[in-house]
Image 1 (cartoon, rainbow, N blue to C red):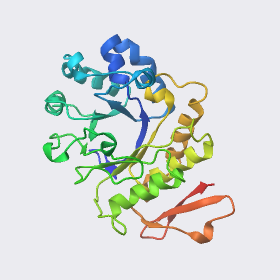
Image 2: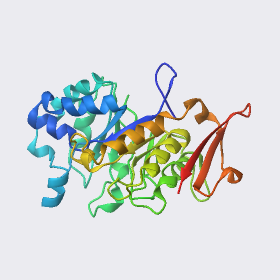
Image 3: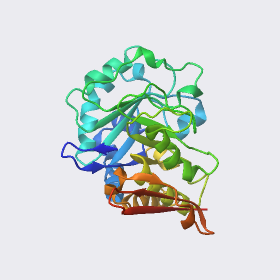
Image 4: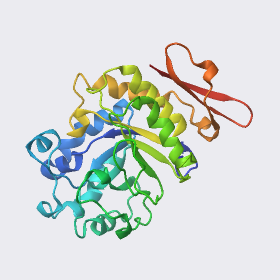
Length: 303
């Protein structure tokens, strides 16, 4: 699990904001202030922001386009962007690659982050989904910044070997809302056929509300992630394009924060237990962590 320099436990209450840096580059700080204000007011503490992406017309309509060669100023602007986010109490998880390699991109990101204190970096997004993928052996973690090798596709093991933390995806998986936490925990703690990384895990892409509109699934998933792993990302159509939450997405964002804040983080250090005897007819799963003194915290995952 994550801790601040003070020793205080910290869990990632994250929001997809893929295009936020693009909007900053193209429109300046005032363009993104309303989004930062909204995210902070709802209770998010971490934004997931992409640093390189492009695609066909549908992709660019839904998300946008940020190609480093078209924005040579982006590396010089990155510290100012992160400082603005920090002024709203927000950390930023930067995703370096969403496709194939870009010469010099990783090194220039590393140079831009010198002295930055509110950034995490994942190397790549769903690396096994791209024909031109990233070879993790070609990269090294950035000194002083928590770094992840990044994700593979939904339910797949993250890109390994691990660095300081791992990222895991459950988007559109069967019974995704019980897997984000439990399967993410197995990456860190180990399971049959899965070597334990013993580093924090953030489930940083889950099923969007437009693909599963049951509010309880999103709230319960968030609570379980706060208990069993190091955080969870609220993934929405509004967040993909870094817009203010629309009337459809906002209740899910609020449920995500509500679920994560419902957990006493003290219990993250407890041992995992699956109390089958507590599962009622409306429960898909019940998860617990139990402290050494016997106290337990329980999360119900509704069907």
